[in-house]
Length: 514
Ligand SMILES: *Cc1c(COP(=O)(O)O)cnc(C)c1O
Image (tube, rainbow, N blue to C red):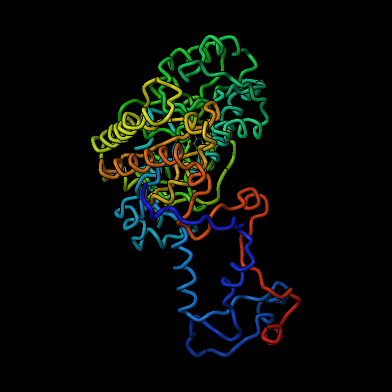
């Protein structure tokens, strides 16, 4: 055990620590981080131009010098963990490296400066990026049509189930329930409920797969769809997927696939070929666009021809002269789900990723992701309990069963990983594995990095046996130790607030208030 990690655990701190607020508060009146050139036009009062809509209460803004501002943001960036600092084995999240080439392309002036209100004739480049990406994703998924609008996976699910609903409605009956396996991501039942469906819970079999006999009993004329993640959230491929699709289709129900785990399938097999009717993709997972930190995601929805009439408007179309256009004339559409074109910058990055890899590269990526996960599985299965022995694909799920005997839980070991320079794996998900430790290395990591992770996890398991308190009080090397996670989620403080209550102000009185 390395001594450098054994600190005296500091007092638990919360996200609202008073001292932190004082250190944080740097504002003082009159400081500026910029200097504007002198006016070369007559000064006007905003009220003269804007009338009633001009803001009267200017509020109180922090006032800082340029170096204070730079230090503030740079300092905060060092308090966080990032894929550019080390491995992020967060299972189900596919935290792969976003190649710099993607960022370079997304910053090309003609792309970054394009305006969504540019007329179509001046947007042909932008539309052709969307069209090329659409074609690539249709090819990868084996589907017939696609919308790029949804802003994330959960938003894609919502859009996909709206299509399912519109499809059944067009046949005269929206149907009542959606079947969801107990291994599903929490967004699946939430989506079904938001779209007005009852959720029917389907139990997994001992191999961690859909219990097909059970499914057969559940599917009836009231079933709108099954929402399935394949490979499932324990990284296991549903080997009976064809039969599952047949059971649903025989009763007129549809198969929705949560495509968050496509990093295990791209270039190897296509959901459209194994019976899926509609699915979403997470460009910010499988296709390397950045995620985390609340950044923009992108969750395109691909579907079979039977669902195409219901896709959100506008739809990309080609005119007789070969130019691209946006088609709004779609009488059966579910309507728009996102303003403008969707998160366009993500389309550029995803397309750059796809084109940089090419078909063979994408297949290799999938194989490497699966190889990496299985390498970790082989190296760690004598250290941690492996609840499902079924062969796994791009991620592996252990449990804390052996360490929990000493009171050390999955969350404790996840936090201890931070002391070893890694981001935690996914803790406590999927729910069918009590004390789940879900690890997804992705193809981005080298064997050397994987070996470091294995060493760290083995050492943490040893600590859990010999010195459980050390693990239970981790992390020890970070600026803050255990946070009040519930408080942070329930009462988040998301913006800077002036220390003095703001009353209606003019620029003159603002300074005096300080
Ligand atoms: C990430 C994920 C989602 C949700 O995607 P977001 O982009 O985070 O909304 C849904 N299902 C599974 C299995 C996932 O891993």
